[in-house]
Image (cartoon, rainbow, N blue to C red; front, side, top):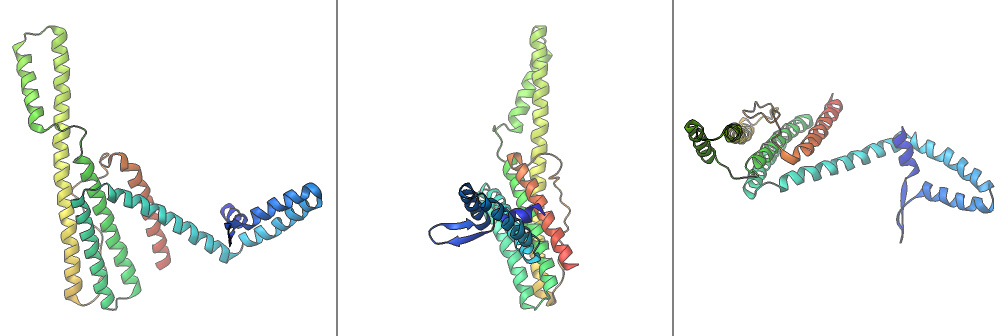
Length: 274
């Protein structure tokens, strides 16, 4: 209820030369100033605000306007965060994403041409949006995995490991130097394991991207051939584990925020269609 009272107090109107002006806040300031000349104005101002603001705040139509405004603002923030993720992708990755979005749009166009019922269109749109979101997350993960801070390769690490192992087998170092080289060898082996794991994850991500591409192609073909609107499923089992570690780098918090926003939108849509 507090947000409705706050919105009612800050409700604004457009005034020439001044832009949008909060009516109640401006009126309160005016009565406060007048009150220094005549204290009775303070009581009048308080009485007016106490009567008008709660009345407006409890009005169902006003509450719906507040909810719509908050939803629109939240949607704008969500779109900005999503666009920021798209902007960090390479031109080739963006092209792949836009191609998928285009095909999803073609699917919906086919269903519209078939006079599909509204709930089927809404359901399919939501399913396709979910696939696009998964696709974008895969591309973001791919971007971070392909942009390491150093350019070390498996071959270079394997060479360093073999050299250290030969030096340790020779046993010509002092004990302190031997301990240092042993510790270095352990670190190099861990780096190699991480690099190999990264290579495997990249292969899995590419496989998942290809799978979604083909799934949307199949959806488009079925929509065109069957001639009867069908409900689309967004369920897809990924080979890559996007939740099994931080693969989104500094964009992990943005991904998490968007996940919550989309989950909230899905819940709202389900309630509206129930």
